[in-house]
Amino acid sequence: MSFSVTAEQERAFQEDGIVKLHGVVDSRLLDELSCCFDWAVRHPGPTLSGDAEGDEFSFVDLGNPAGRMMYEKLIANSPFGRIAADLWQSEFVGFLSEEVYWKKGKADQTFWHQDTPYVPWRGEHWANFWIPLCDHPADYAIKVVRGSHKGIMYDGTTFNPSDPTEPLWGDAGTFPRLPDISAELAADPASWDIVSFDVEPGDVVVLHPHCVHSGGGADATMPERRTLVLRFFGDKSYYSDHLPDAPGMYENPPIESVNGGYLADGDLFRPERVVNVNL
Image (tube, rainbow, N blue to C red; front, side, top):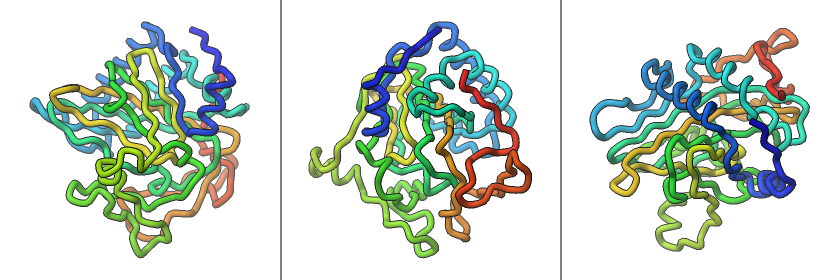
């Protein structure tokens, strides 16, 4: 199917760091996305968090190398590459990885965080395509602090349930500690400018991964939450050495460059095995 990004949608992404694209995914593509989701649950990868057992669970998996070809094939037959190119005004669009979320019964919301304190990259041209596979009211969908993709890089969180802002890097880094946004919003709903949308299957929400963001949980109001995220990068995407030289939650081994050797600080983010999906 064809989909044209409007000037207002491009502006919203550039200024707010998030935009809702209604009706991007047709029934064929939605079936393929659901098949990818089901496959991911049956074949979890090495970074799995949680499980999919019982009546209450939280399942999160990302970057499963065994599914790489499956996702590349899906993307090649989708409008996602062209949409990313139009949102950025970029000639190049690369596919980075996927992330799978399934929450059922009773599960906490995902803690507020940015992706950038966990990964060695930076730049304007990054996008997470957050794709709902069931209806999500705005309170349970992806949420961002408006415009935070242009602001501070906070320390990561360790996702400790007893301390949602426990620093990932702490004294090893120079990042300010993440504010307790949930607590501040509970005390004053106007304390942070939050953007989220009611969404349904067929919609795509695109956000910059440097946005401070959170995802909803599962409870009696929304007992099941199923989403698939596809991550892309473009012309203005760079490798960065901002991560401390210290143990953290995630390992980031050197990345081989398409030009030989390994990516270094400031290099265009062009891993060895990279395909332009701007179709």
